Image (cartoon, rainbow, N blue to C red; front, top):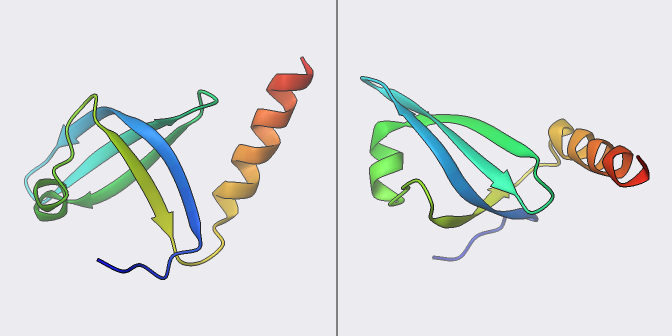
Length: 79
């Protein structure tokens, strides 16, 4: 599958809370920050998301949380 997403972050699935229609997926990045996303149960199954598996997060637009992660990581390294 070809993606046009420019922002890609690699991490490991640390939890999945399954609901009737949507699920909440948490992925821990290399520096320890955790990204939380709500996606459909169909997408969770289709993507084969399972706790412990490594995945790459993709975003087509420049999300504001990306700036937040970089800032938080920089503060952690300075401490």
